[in-house]
Length: 132
Image (cartoon, rainbow, N blue to C red; front, side, top):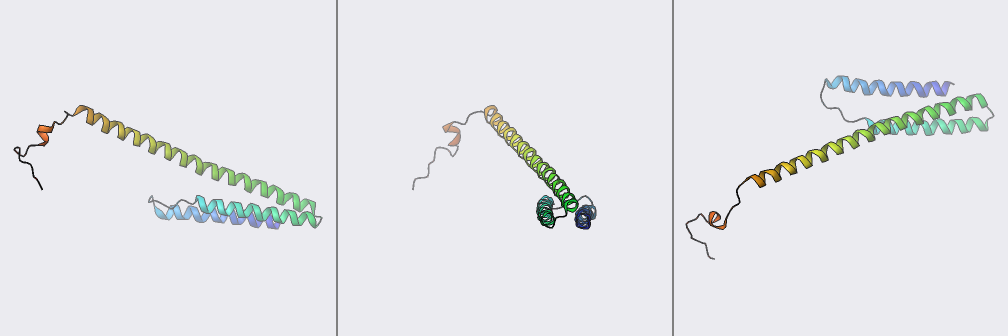
């Protein structure tokens, strides 16, 4: 139980530090903490699973069960964080694609509305061609 409490305390401390970083930025851009969160949660759940496996070998079923529950919770939290980051990335890419298509359509509409250029208009130099 002590190991589970230490793991939970470490996780709460990590999120507290990340919150302080965002608070200290006072509205300015803060580097995305998703990579650090995924690393923390994946190593935390892997370590918790290894501890649970060791406790099962030591014939401590209650402690093993507590560690297994902690592992499952960390894995669930990892899925939520990764899913949220993936959703944000998908939405950002869709928005960029939509804006790109709107810009392309706008440029095409500008080309259609302008009068076509003729060869005589392009040769506005009075008929003088530069021959090299």
